[in-house]
Length: 588
Image 1 (cartoon, rainbow, N blue to C red):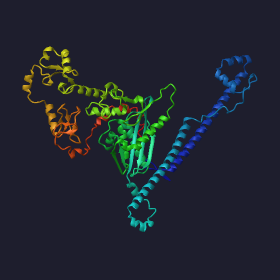
Image 2 (cartoon, one colour):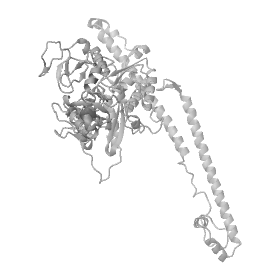
Image 3 (tube, rainbow, N blue to C red):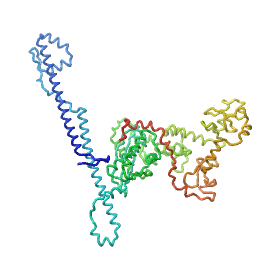
Image 4 (tube, helix red, strand yellow):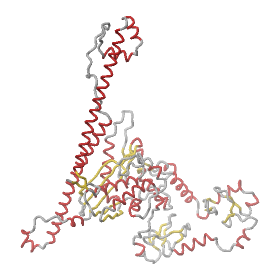
């Protein structure tokens, strides 16, 4: 007899029976060896007892007492307490020699390993029986839905004529079952609970074409790392294995993790070693399906899987040891963005308006704003409260803190006062006042009068009038006369802007590109204008007669994205090192 497993192969029941027989034989051999060891130990103790008694018979009682005082206490105690005396000079009687005091250690590691393996075989057999039952129930449901559709397609007149003769049962058509496309939803969730302990959960939901739930998984995620992409990849692997175990051939995978979606589709290549191993395993599992297509969806479309993952984490929290009376009782608050219950210590309060959000939502909000070159504000609708850098250090990485400081500095300097270091490897942003103050102590007075300044970051000399590296032994007039054309970098930038139809904000001179959407543009400085002609928008209304959009720009450009692959490939390896207990743990 054979049975189906989730690895697309067949396992013979006889193999398990043979293995169980071998385990039983090994158990008997271990028990026999322990019995032999017990007999040998008993014989040794008996010989030791006889040798001591024989030596005592040749000594006077006083000498015997003196000799016994030199024996180790443990040996003397064992000899006099557990072994009877055959000498007439011994006055203390002991119980008869026997094996009653010797017990074999049945809880040895060998016995534990055998018991674990036997239990694993029983669990696997029970799991396969349950999977077979679910698979048969799924096939029956597919057949019932097919029959129901056929009945609905029959006109009422025909049904009245020969509906009673409609076949109640039809032979199973394997091709029809394989043609059904099922829906796979998955979620790998990480949550930082009290005590800064990371708990993870996996949620899997498999639905039929009518979105009826047919199979679910809610289990803890092994590992204590902080890599969300690795958690999502492990959940995807679990879901694909479950679909294979159910015998599904065609599935649509609904994914809401943008980087994992790009890894899955091959648009990006994983640069982290351990994530790459997980993605390779996903690719191998995908090849076992006749049809397996991923679709990127918002998080609310994977409600089932998200709930199952959250239940897995909740079950782990419930099984944690109870806190002592002197420990702090956690106070929970719901974040109004993600609606997750979070410890109040993980809730961020905006300094000015006191709106409160969890660290995770705030980090995502600030990161997106910074990547778009904008100053992050309070996420609350119509709230213009700016975020304080020092307060944001609670949830931002050092890289994002540095980027936020730069954005704040850019916003604080008027456009006319901004000066960038002309050296390509520096390009540090400075204000005119900052440059002038630094030049007083770093540049000779004679050079200051002819426009020489020094960068406060790279300490390179440059000309503030010509905006170029310092032209030594040459006045600004002579330099401009010898270099009448714009710098090569500016020419390349203008050429690139012309070729790609970029527009320049008339307020801050920032270059803007229309990736998709309408012609109504909002610059990072807040200025609103028409991308087609440059006319200003006032009160959310256009002041020109240009069309609001071009249909070519409305269509989603598959190759364009607001995200950069490198944003998800940097600074991940250190977090992943804690995600697995060993090099191979968690991969399979």
